[in-house]
Image 1 (cartoon, protein in one colour):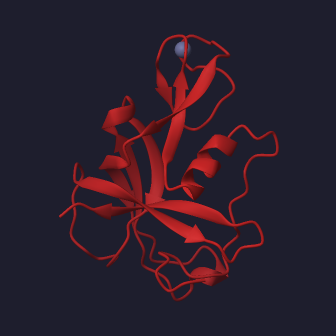
Image 2 (tube, rainbow, N blue to C red):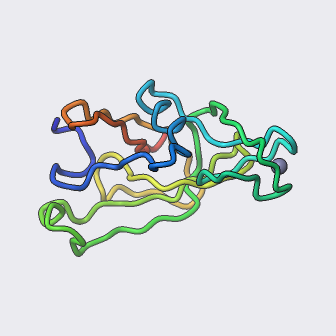
Length: 148
Ligand SMILES: [Zn+2]
């Protein structure tokens, strides 16, 4: 694992759902593209992935690429490790990022850089695609960096 990952090695690797519902998301991250669900019937955005639209209950839910840009909606900073791999990694900062280009849906990621850097709710952030090519099944995580 490279040294430029937000969190250290030893954490469980994410796995696409067995039913492949979220496969387009994970395939997109490998290409450094952010994809989220959008209902083809009512054009509503949603996250996380579901088989039906939250709004109109259509089964015609597709995937669209969105700008990898968001704003900080909320955050937390763990100081106590919840996994043995995180013993030396605390504190780190977890963000709940709102995507204004996708109807304001929100997703979770980690803040890249100094975990104690000052930031505020509403700050603009950009996605960073963190490749884990060394994994048995390579995957890419979406992390977030503050815009200058
Ligand atoms: Zn819909």
